[in-house]
Image 1 (tube, rainbow, N blue to C red):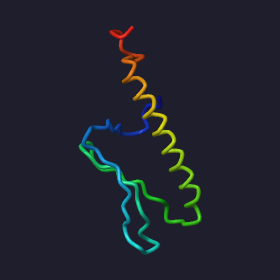
Image 2 (image 1 turned 45 degrees about the horizontal axis):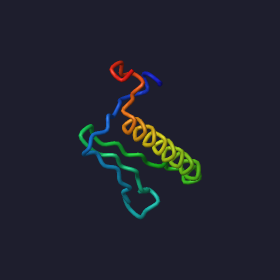
Image 3 (image 1 turned 180 degrees about the vertical axis):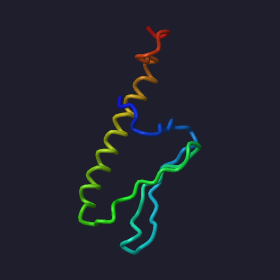
Image 4 (image 1 turned 90 degrees about the horizontal axis):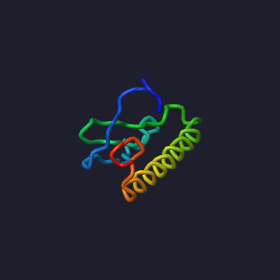
Amino acid sequence: MRKGFGPTWVISRWDEVTVEETGSSPGAPPALVLSGTAGLLMIMPPDDRASWPDRAAFLRRLRDCADELAALLENRAMNGVCDDDPAQK
């Protein structure tokens, strides 16, 4: 895992993720918003609309990685095993 990248957000049961339309003008694109007890994070596309297809590809990778993390969490929760928990070994 990378260290020193920035703040860490530990997900709580009250956190939400939404897509918000910020306006209809080109200067107000929609945003992905994560909000909850840890604060607020908005993922916005850059101003350069020509780069939006690349950002769309990034968001799809983000979705795929979130699905992978969800599957790992579900699997570990069902099996009751965590690699770093000595009590489980």
